[in-house]
Length: 598
Image 1 (tube, rainbow, N blue to C red):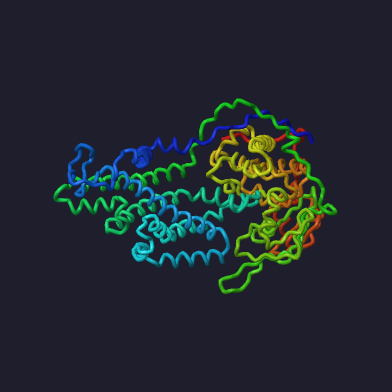
Image 2: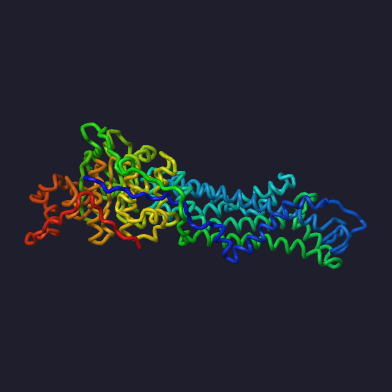
């Protein structure tokens, strides 16, 4: 067939409005950020003030604000209050960074690992952090004070370690929820590494609560350091808000104003950190704002022959693409027994062949498809005598081998298009991500734009820059099809690709799949319960019931003379012998129906 020409499209450069700009538009964010930035700048420029915070002189004892050489006065030892305030600000900022940093790094790293990996790792790390949580952090800091040598930095490191279980539990619990999202499975199928998935699609989603946690940890660390200094723990040569407050309390009846400066600065610092964390959380979790399109200087033209219609070489022995032998999938029940949901399933898919895997809900067809993709939950026990993809034997128990075939060799089209797109990122950024490893970012963008046009999207540039909530279900399915074929896969596994769509869009998606399968020469394993889809698209059909294959054969023979009683029931349930189906009207060669944008 002749494919339609791909229109010239500009590679978009506009992105969602920057987080900083949106933060500055919030009064809370603007005020808190301004205060915090001013305090940090004051702390950095503090040494330029020229006064030694520990230098004392008897003639300046308890002089008031505005005295010559002392803008805020001097304390009962004749030390300049402003110099000590600037030095204390540095100490507090460093304390907050160390305490919150240690706690956040330890808790986040191990929380991501425990929440995303298997039960054994989760159990061990959870036990360790629960053990650490049983120790009172502040008491241990006091007990370990002698070995710190009076260094507040070491005390904050110790304090951060004992604060990390709270961050760990927060991150772990959030990851456990996010890891089951379908867009995480889609990222795994696209061939992304575990580190990439955790850092981009998991950590990015949970960043809101984590930001709030970091803000409170920083303010807590600052308060604890000040409290320890107030109690006299720490070097007397290191100024801090706690030491200044302690000295001011001792001198409150002589110069009560001295208590105002450290208290006010400490309140401004901790308050601005917490309020900025709240404002930043709100800004980063707001994924609804999309920047307006901007004009691009250049126009990129990409040949569809080069990008959207790669030819798959027949490099599998004897034309075999997928070979699965005696697949068994079971789950452990609460009573300790094993429930077998897939029993000795064997199937083959040849290059250029479309095989339909049919059965009612719960028949095991999706479990079979997910076994090939390596997407079954960790609770599943999966075994097979053989899994061969493209002539290469793959071990179902080897995660690295399973990751190696995703994206480039095996691709996946899910049944819930909207749930398989990460709501935090634009369509374009998610599709480009799967191609960025093999080509430049600009080439990947041009390829994706050409594919979006090829799958029937009328405005590829607009869709490229849109977020998932800004497109319809039919367009989302087209986007996922474009993403699936972008990696030039040899085998395409489509799990109920038209279930969530209305009848008209279903027909268009089936036409599109048929055209792309013919162009790319892919083998397709189509998981469905709709015999009408099978009749329209498939060459062979495999019927499953209760986790077993009950019948297999070419589509015509299975439809005209089904052998198994279950197959006869399925065919009888959807076909009416008295209804004659007319042939669809002729379509122009290569024509594709485009769904309008919303």
